[in-house]
Amino acid sequence: MSQRIVLLHATPVAMPPIQQAFKDVWPESEIVNLLDDGLTIDRAKTEQLTPELIERFVALGHYAYAMQAQGILVTCSAFGPAIEQLAAALPIPVLKPNEAMFEAALQSGKRIGMLATFGPSLVTMCDEFEHYAAQCGSDAKLETLLVPDAIDLLRKGDVASHNRLVAEYAPRLSHCDAIMLAHFSTSQAADAVRERVSVPVLTAPHAAVKKLRAALGETSC
Image (cartoon, rainbow, N blue to C red; front, side, top):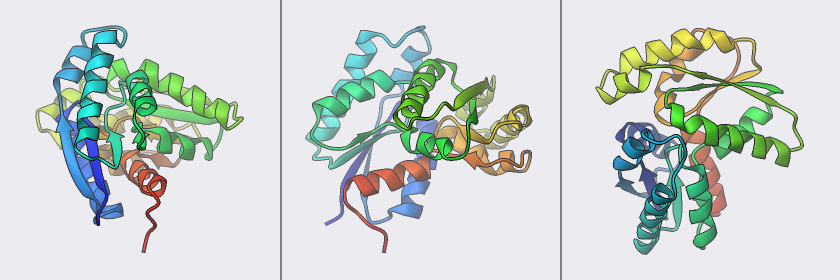
């Protein structure tokens, strides 16, 4: 039987990249999508991740588990502490969106750049990167760059302008050993970014699917 994987989305723009990654990496899995885009809307209104938002997020995760999920993958990077709380509460793998990409970045060098389009996610993502670096015994440093207006373009369906804008900012991080595209949604700009820089450009969706598949004991044919 195929494994049931529930994807927790806080914005619809994260859905196409991760769905494509599952088609590419693990097509035989059974994917169920849970979306509450109110989470991202309300997260953008607060400087910090509030207890109320954490409670809402964790409740969504428990609903996913009640659907007999065998694994949960979160596709929004702005809810790190809530994901940790959910992972501690459930007996199944619960993956943060970027942990696999962070691991790959730490193998690329000590100067890591990150292009982001959703500002509220940066604090938790930087904390998570430092946590993974400490676990690996790395003294790698993260340099972040926020691309304004890009996510608004994507929400309006203008993927081409989103990709072009993200790519325009990429050369500012060309001195880094690798550049990460912070969000699942940002991964759509990967080809455009790679045309502007010569360093490795890392994206989260495919790495996340591979890690979840391995965590559930599934191997590639």
